[in-house]
Amino acid sequence: MSLIILDRDGVINHDSDDFIKSADEWIPIDGSLEAIAQFKHAGYSVAVATNQSGIARGLYDLETLHSMHKKMAEMLESIGGAVDAIFYCPHLPAARCSCRKPKPGMLLEIAKRFKCDSLAGVYYVGDSYRDIEAARAAGAVPVLVKTGKGQRTLDEYDAKVLADVLVFDDLIAVANNLLVTK
Image (cartoon, rainbow, N blue to C red):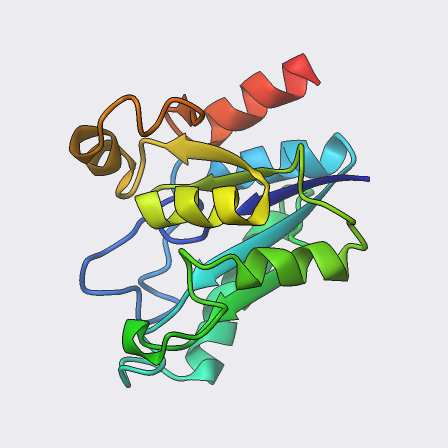
């Protein structure tokens, strides 16, 4: 089975330092939904791993988070795409839980859900250094997109630190490149 894991904010939809707090604020990045559809058509299972501390901060509730994901699912369905599973961490950084990235807990739970003995060879696409750290800790292949906080991440970290990271402009570029080389 082919599996790809995606961060949400900054990879699939536009991000905000003030958090995405409603379905109205959830706006896909150009080409991201088409990229997910391409992965699905190529036989991939698509999972999302996203930190959502806005829940613990009281900025939105679980019902609102589910409405964002319902909007994403409906938009994907209209173009023949889908996400197979969404994993989220609702905790604050201070909670020191095992699911909040950069810890690998969510990615390891995804591996269990999809019956993967290992995430070796599985791409995890994110836009922040904590996504890269989570991918490395889980044994997945770290992929960075320049959307969201991605360009900031590239600017902040030395090339040596990012030497093992695949870098693309956006999620559609990831799909166009990885599906061709598969």
